[in-house]
Amino acid sequence: MKEEVVKTNQQVYFSQSDIDYDDLAKICSQKTLQEDYPFADSVSNNVVIYDANYLETFIGDSENELRLKTELHQVLEGGPGVFVIRNLYRHDAIDQSNNIFEKIVESEGNTSNDHFASGTNTRIWNAFQKVALEDPNAFISYYSNNLLKLVAESWCGPNSQMTAQVNIVRPGGEMQKPHRDYHLGFQENQIVELFPISAHRLSNYLTLQGGVAHTDMPLASGPTMVLPYSQQYELGYLAWRDNACTDFFNDNAVQNQMNKGDGIFFNPALLHGAGSNTTKDFHRIGNLLQISSPFGKTMERIDYLKIINRIYPLLLEHSINKTLSEKLIENVLVCATDGYAFPTNLDNDKNSNSKLQGMTMFELTKQSLLDLVNLENFSLKLLEHQKIRFTN
Ligand SMILES: [Fe+2]
Image 1 (tube, rainbow, N blue to C red):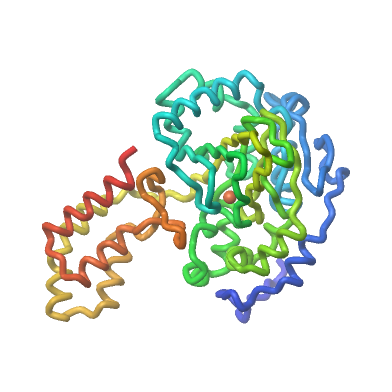
Image 2: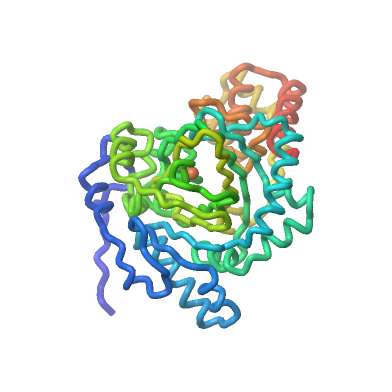
């Protein structure tokens, strides 16, 4: 067996100052050749285009399904990172959903907004659950789609978890700031810097982003803008907030018109952003799908509420008497609380403009100890915090 050389001198942690736009430009100068993707219908603006009517012929034959999943995976990983499937949904399925969306928007009073744009768009957070509860028939017909399952498996493997958010962009709706998506795409730069580069790479594989056009999306209505191949730039999670990155995106991103029922799928590390709706009277509706790898789950289910309520009085004593340093208490909290902001209820857990995520249980507990809040008040705060995040 060949002896492997163990590399010990490679940089593991990166900061914004390591970003090199020449690298990004070189990566994004790659051209997509249709001959590399034999099942594709065409290539448009460097994006691979498939037709659902043809892809359907692969369903039911495990060898063919494997060949197709392999090709889709290659588009997402070493290829442009994005593909479109024309005619993924029939118009009647879309119309059925749109009627339900309308009902939900009415009942919610049109108040939700999105993470990456200000202005006149409307969000239905967790449309996945809301549609299931509103109309089980519509839910079943939408999520029984064979190609949707195959696409999910092509990136996340089996047993992935679906979430969906509806985005309605009104005339005059502004362009989203180009960004990367969940997980690391939702973290501030100073947090992203704390993750080794291996975790940056891993983040690409933990979700697949998708969007189904629920109306036609002519270019003027602002279908998703993407920067093909940008998912291959390893420092992209640190770069997207940088103005130079936005400039590069604006100069090089591409946009393909979508028809009602078409789907777009991309690597979450692909730089992208919804375009602006410059029409006077056209409401663009997209159902954004986020498909999560099952690997984001723990092996055992832990009741952090029970643990923290039990140990809080002791931690408070340590805080008051200074018998444990802040740092050592923090070490305990990292283990004894949930320090991650997700999953949450995005209707209730409002993000501010500067931050993409609400307060975590870790932050709440740490702050309560610093403020010397007693157990009774801490427990009440915690209950309220949990209610906001986990009641649907
Ligand atoms: Fe996004």
